[in-house]
Image (cartoon, rainbow, N blue to C red):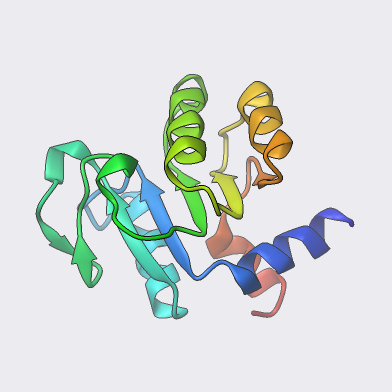
Length: 138
């Protein structure tokens, strides 16, 4: 499967997305991307320990992935590359039916990606769904 086909499949099948590193500041990319995803019909769960318990994007901000009840299809990571590994490991442990790990522009971690792929979780690195959705005509 080529990369565009994989991205298209992820974006069409993942409906609940946890955004790790979400910011309440409207000028931050994590805020804008999360709001864009909501506008496209996705259920977005913001994750940021400094704002846990606050209402945002039609949900409540969670301190960590472990604080999310119910299934999550995709984790969208807005963290530095060196911080990705523990996020991926927590996601893999917490969500047995996770479909995708998405690392934002400038974010990569080949070892974490390999761990996810060994669990049949699709991985996208160094891309943004807010760019891919319009590019792919979704």
